[in-house]
Image (cartoon, rainbow, N blue to C red):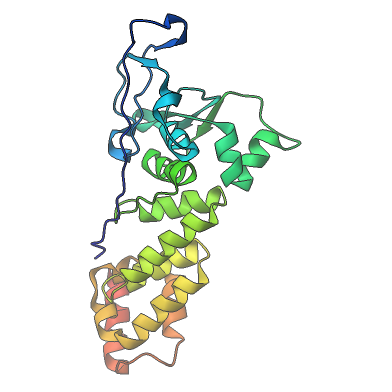
Length: 249
């Protein structure tokens, strides 16, 4: 069972209106207050008053991080997810295009979209925010609940560095109990290195892998790939029993 959670977060303050320079005040009715942690990024929708936010950020990185999931200067909105779980996520085309060839083609290619709202029904909001968090901040937020959906989203938008982090996370948390399930996912997402590590684990801990709870949930093609190996460390009688259990379940 995956147990490791990697979280990094930064919070940036909101500055209230000063007594002068009224022309520089921006009223953001209903806009989301920025927060780099994914848990809070889509939950706050209170009217805020911003003044000279640029002056409070000493570096370009701080200014870009501040824009993460922030409607300030945003020029595109993603409608991520389906039904009641759908979330509106503001973004900035320049930042996304700098970090993803897919986003670059989407906004700047010959068939670039002219819409300011883009629906993404096949991605979970938490995974989409994890990819945007990486593009804006270089920070990684992966946990056992979101690693596979984040991997899918990173591959969808060709964010290779985040994809590698997801695969490394899975490798580091690979055990005999989840080797079969991760092998199935590795094949689904076309991750040959992860698949190879899963197969090695099954070879070394064959009995434990075949008796794991998730064994009966794998697809038949994955099972056939494993059964064709001559490196399994298990007696044929136990292997036969495991296959029977798979068929019955």
